[in-house]
Length: 378
Image 1 (cartoon, one colour):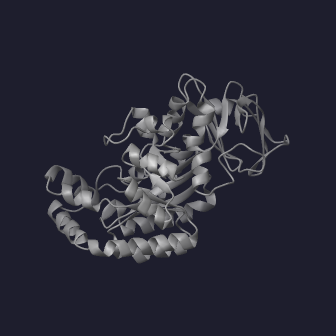
Image 2 (tube, one colour):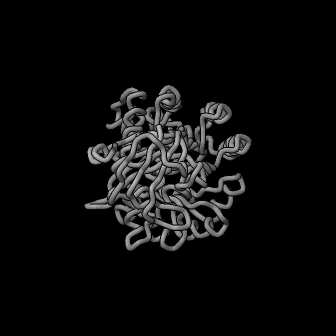
Image 3 (cartoon, helix red, strand yellow):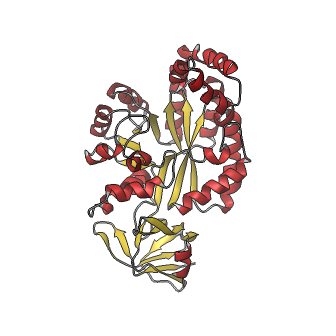
């Protein structure tokens, strides 16, 4: 059904945030006023829908406490509700395919893909898969390659948390966090991790194979937690043009100068710094060394971070961090900007007393409506 959004201030390309009525016809933005419903956006902002390249908060729906799991279909439905309530119209679920049992296992991976497929006919948020390939997970290489070939993966990221896990195993408190997540006793987990680590010589060849599969499938690639300009350059040579959470500013600078996309977490901005003690996302944005923000582990942080960074009239520019830029990095050229013919993904926002979502439009359909939003729909 057509929708006319009237009376608001919209983020329009080349003009910035200006008074403008926005019209949708079917699934796209239109230049013509329709004869369907009208949304009174007076006093509100009409912004492009948020595109989240890396969000793993869905894991909290799957396993809200260590060892406490819920059905995957329920977790997927609840995750979509949270996404839409926070203005996220395209979400790449950061799914870690690790050698660890439990939450990040091959079994969980398969169950999540099945639940996403089953949910797809009725979903409004465009939910996609960001495969976070754990470098030492050699046993699941064929599983990952099969998913890429079947078109079930939309973004591939190279992860290598195994060396860090092995270092932490000596500390029983830290080690227990990993073993609890895996649902097994600490000593058994230590034995498992040690055996996985012993296959380090096989890791580079596996990385080459999965990178080749991603290139053949034409999906974008990222490297996660880049530690240096040299490591970033090595992944760039494989075709990974996204630096996902570089650990320091020199690495982010090298990536930016090479034309790569640099991704940081929006919780880092909202909280005033990294909970891991790494680079400040806000400082890197201001320095021009970060072009994309993601939800990381907390969906509401995306909207708030854009407003924090956009204080003083810069919201139009900063909104690109969570919409136009991630869409471009993912090769999704049909969204991220309010232009005729583009996908009608919009978020209607009130900026007082604190920024909050009043309504979310996904593919031309009203996907989330607050009580205030319902009173404005005619």
